[in-house]
Image (cartoon, rainbow, N blue to C red; front, side, top):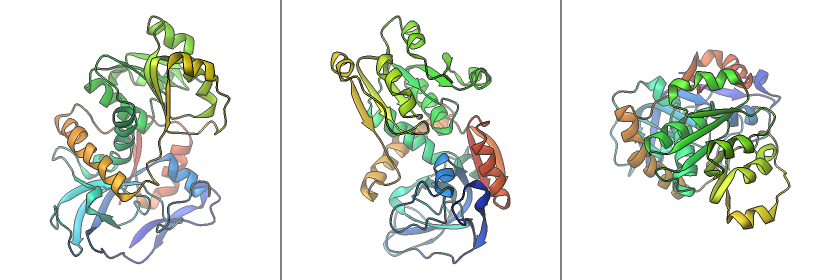
Length: 326
């Protein structure tokens, strides 16, 4: 089968397509014929040798989300039939013609979505829902601050928060990206290229601050995040593109009774990922089915052009998802 293959881990220019053996499903597993797969920043890090996968997954075969149909069921696999359209998350190997997945990590694709649209959904929507709702417990009427709101996870969080009746403030590096999101329901956008945004957040919330912050940037935003939090605010750190180390004002954390949580989906146990998938099936898929949440696909590339797809994502020009068709 064809699969995206990382060679010497020197970056996006070392990514191509190789012929590799087709996997076989084991107990409680399904073999999925992949039709589309999202490209994520984690793939770029893996190509650079900076984000190795968990044990059992080849570091040479990236891909964290996929959409396709079930080609074969392993012993004991239940809940699906051969030919069913499914999408889901994986710790690797997602950008290939075939993929083996435990059935607990699969969800049925709504009829209104194509394979290409579905291929850019699971990783970002499961990550956003888990961080914002399961862990940070965003509620109706609260304010969510999303950093890198034009990213795949950022746009997924925007859709979910608006569907839940929350107010949203989003930051992005450029005014152009903020302007493009006006049609997506973003109430207030902040150009945060300099990492200074707390005064604007406080002004937009009449001094109260954000109840929940979804941080896809990391250390460079940490101090401003604490300053932007409301009383009993919750900070969820998901991305580390600006670094891993930051100073913390513990006095501010105590005064605000703030909660800080880091979240990491890829390395979780099967049971934890299955629970996150179940939340996705129950609470997100109906929104996708109704159109309240939607795929945000920026560019689509054939798998043969995977290097160009990675280069485009690395350029930081995209608003939403880059997807490979396989």
